[in-house]
Image (tube, rainbow, N blue to C red):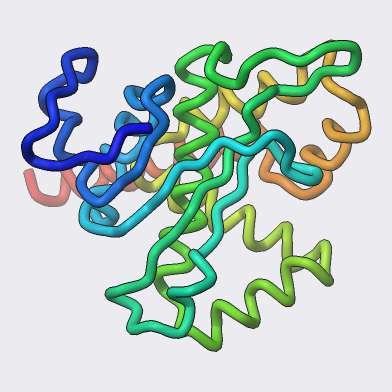
Length: 211
């Protein structure tokens, strides 16, 4: 586990990424991918975020949540945790999560960081309401996942998200029930592709207006 500070050496991490580890606790084996995903979210540079391996997360591979003891604190002092399943469970076997391709890990982590961006817009009471809605309403879950993907796309992670979603939906060894859940509740690769296209068109139009 790596806790980042000004005096810690990180020889395997590009120097320009190290600063994004400020106030973060990251397992060393996924350090590079986590820092890469964080680099798309400069707004989270000073936020306290813990990345924690879990043996099993019910119905999920990764899960972003506020640290319970900080929910009632001032928003500036709120801390977050991203739980990561230590094993990527397939129908007949399981592989260590860190053995997934880099772009898949970056896309997955980038999506979870999108949730944290969403949490950051919410009051303490709003966070409690979010939690209740998430566990009681599939429609609420779908909207929450759309918001998280929206943050990730706007920050430039669109191609990573597309790779991650296609990896899940096309994986022959993933349980069909899990793939059905992803298809039902999460934004599809084609929808992400369209969001990326529209975002690039908006950027081009803005550049032309300035030029």
